[in-house]
Amino acid sequence: MAISWPLVVSLLLSISSLATSASNSDPVHEAFVQCLLDNSHPSHPISEAIFTPQSPSYATVLQSYIRNLRFNETYTPKPFLILTALHQSHIQAAIICAKKGNIQMKIRSGGHDYDGLSYVATVPFFVLDMFNLRSIDIDMETDTVWVQSGAILGELYYRISELSKTHGFPAGVCPTVGVGGHFTGGGYGNMMRKYGLTVDNIVDAYFIDVNGRIHDRKSMGEDLFWAIRGGGAASFGVVLAYKIKLVSVPEIVTVFRVEKTLEDNATDIVDQWQHVASKLPKELFVRLVIDVVNSSTRTGGSTVRVSFISLFLGDSKTLVSIMNENLPLLGLSQSDCIETSWIRSVLFWTNITIDSPTDVLLNRTPSLSYLKRKSDYVKQPIPKTALEGIWEKMIELQPAQMIFNPYGGRMAEIESTATPFPHRAGNLWKIQYLANWNQGGAETAQRYIELTRKLHRYMTPFVSKNPREAFLNYRDIDLGVNHHDRGSYLEGRVYGIKYFKGNFNRLVHIKTKVDPTNFFRNEQSIPTLPH
Image: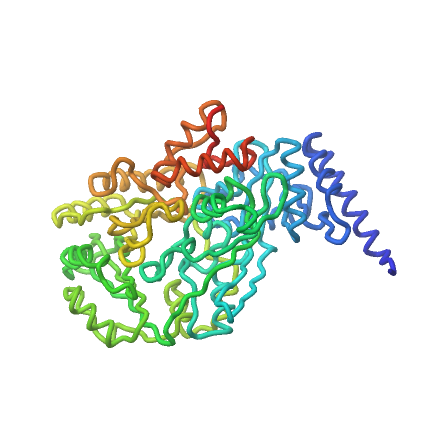
């Protein structure tokens, strides 16, 4: 075989610069880089996937998948190295070498981790970044797809739509979210009332364990396969790819967005929504977004705006009939509705002009802001008088917002123990609390975070109790932090019970079995059993 000397020289120079970069840090980091190089296969050299602070592209690689600008400040702790894996052997080398040096590894796919746990740490750490591993292999004969963890949802949806007008997948409405984190946390979208969550539609996975071995569903066993579908795979290993089952969608779906304010009878409409949203046909999902805007009737005053945003897997005539029978106060009319394809409904839901070219979904760059998110689950309708109190509190705490995502349908049929995600029957809707801002600095961040916390505290009487439940994919560091010392299990239980309820203990037992030394850890990972 002919030798390409320019390639050899290039590799030698690359390795030399990596060694120099490592030597400018500490001996542990230097040994880690050398270990990566030593464990790299010649046919898949790892050197081009390694970025240290001395690498010209380091800042670009780090920042390109930071979706929350709160974690892109000068004072934010930075990784001593980023490994942008180009091949599964790079992941294996990273695990082997990090374990050898007892080095903290963070795993990042899309970067939409709300509290930055996939790319920030308080101890020296490196980031295993999956964004190069994003192949999508669709088999229309079996209606299945192998999708790698570094793909984004928009890429997945677009590739499905290239092959079929009558297939889709029930996952998130934000196209720049990475498959890796979204799937492992129990990702949901606007078809969950019909088809459940992403984790309810995963049928296999390629998984790399703490010893660097690659498994599929059969070799990993049903316990571990259960854990990585909603329990947060980063506590157990690295998921290289998932095999998912496609679902059927009609050629024509219908969407609408209708906005009302307090002056438009919003309180009564919301009251009616909360009694029927979880009981509507499975094909219908009506999200409720609540925010504060300037009032058109009060000079300098504020009012609450409620936005009803819907996807219906059917035609507009049927949709209007269902809505006027079940939610007549909204007064939905044919002119409010847009009939379109499923793939274009994705554009509508992410506020992209609906007739835009659908390849816009391949764009991996989202709009960025500083943000904080929290979550809750609601079991009983909120009294109408209490809704009025909530509006007053929101006007006081603006710009904090809430999004209500209705449950029922398929979500109420799947057992709470079927996957680690436990929030099934008995929930009327999930709340997402959100605040976005556009000014940097710790003081500004603290002010907006506190607004979100105050709204969350105010809602205490109206949400789940014992535990007050939370959604893993809305990662919230306020729920507790694990220091991974002697109290690790007890610290983990604090947030673990909120995320997983009765499934937490099973996750702990699986974790203890497959990763007994707790190599795969973060500030809210599944702990091992106490020794």
